[in-house]
Length: 331
Image (tube, rainbow, N blue to C red; front, side, top):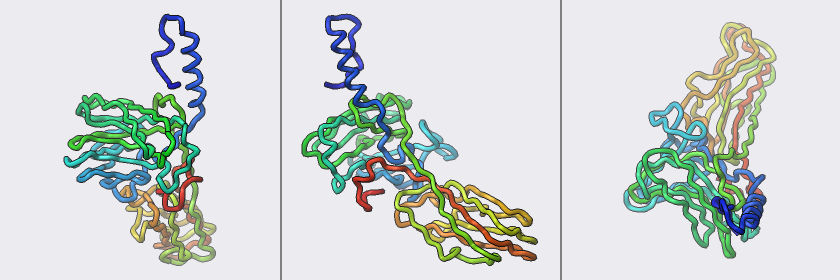
């Protein structure tokens, strides 16, 4: 039994049975959540011209770049950014996310239908499509019809016996290019009709400098590395005692390099301050192995200030299938 958007027919003897068939398919799909991490391509810790975090690019000569809000290429469909993928001319270009890689495969998925949808923009016919791969085979969507307009592509697959992985991908013929935006992956045989947001979590790294402040590198010797890819949202400062003469200036670093052109500060006589990272976009994105550190770069001259709390707010994508993943699988 599979979803068929053409049922029920406008007339015929089997209308009731066909309605029931579609209801059963809907029942198996409704209430699901988007299982992909970063389906709108927010986190690019390696820079704008390498694969975004949670995704991998393959294909000889293939390239990927961040496009969207505030960039020279402002193309986007869902969220602030999308991914532009270009093949290298020699072989198919593939931008892939493993929901369950081979090392984390669990056979509870066998016998389940899964479905994926994505907004795709492509100038050429028979060039761009999306796919689901379970290790025993791959199901492909129809090709984008071309014309340089956004189209919602979908595909479903029944995960069969012997499956070894679960992955989705955007795929291009060897000479193609296309944009991908707003992926949605559901357990169920009814393809998503549009983008559904994926679950995210926000949290904070908190450091406290008690007592009278002094300028210091790596506040309290702190170096923090995330388990999941992370986007820094804002730095918030609060003092127990105000500075005088000069403001208190704090810096937040990725691997020793600042995330800021204009560093967070607490003005003289004030107790609070905040700043959003304004350096390169990659500097505010942390991948596995990257380290975040906090410096106090300046204190007041007549009164240095006291009892400083630094709060770095950050966003990560929750991966609903993470309980099946090993440490090295959480990319």
